[in-house]
Amino acid sequence: MTAKLISGSEIARQIREELTGETARLKEKFNVVPGLVTILVGQNPASMSYVTAKQKASKEIGFHSIQENQSETMTEAELLALIDRYNRDPKIHGILVQLPLPKHINETRVLYAIDPKKDVDGFHPVNVGKMMIGEADYLPCTPAGIQQLLIRSGVKISGAEVVVVGRSNIVGKPIANILLQKQKGANATVTICHTGTVDMAFHTRRADILIVAAGKPKAVTADMVKEGAVVIDVGVNRIGMTPDGKARLCGDVDFETVKEKASLITPVPGGVGPMTITMLMMNTVKAAKLAAGIE
Ligand code: GUN
Image (cartoon, rainbow, N blue to C red):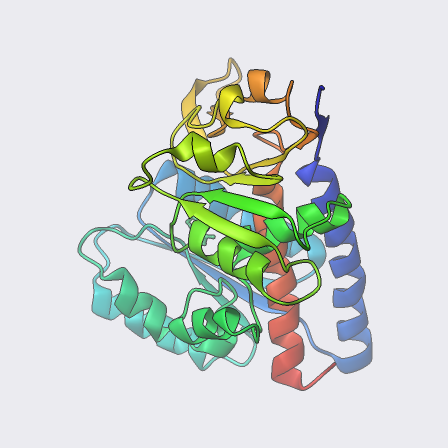
């Protein structure tokens, strides 16, 4: 079997079109413009490109958007004061602090400082807790994007064996949580594998839906995949440069061999990546509506 591609770029385009329409409606009917601030501390090249893409998308959709580029030497107190300013700014509905932060800044303290109502990344413990009990206002963006890719590609999630490789707070733990909820687009049987798992292939070979966020190129090879599985590759590994100076990317899945076994597979780039940004946009529209009491 040769897998069909799940085009994250195409699905993201559709959702962004929906969000552009909804943003225009909010402006026209309620005079509400969703506002997003993205805060970048330092010059990590990957973070710079993510933040630029988030800003570009938010402008295209019609948001009020602000980019804060702060120096690597910014103190934690200065960052907390900046967050506090945006917590109190009524024009801003979403605050995103790009991770990772420089080592001298405590990430947990920063994430706790964001008003949970403006936490469009879904990283504040209040929002993590709400997700856990199936009451989320904002799902974290990459896992929410993965769920949308599955739903919009017609994949049956209820009752499926889902295996997640990776247990990060940003992807592995939340996607497992989202897909096990007793809700539409979920209700799966979920296993999480990680660096302490003894026999990874034993688990991955049982997966109807295999979600790989291992942070390691080619962590999943064809012998680890069941014939006909749906494979979602969350990895973004930089493996040099293209001739036109862009970063050359590969995922955590050995795409060339796994695509011969899977029924559906996401490419890297053009798979999960565009969905992450799109879900941030969706959360920002939701934040603006919640702030204004609009349904
Ligand atoms: N760094 C890597 N992924 C993310 C994300 O989804 N949000 C933020 N804020 N930082 C990240």
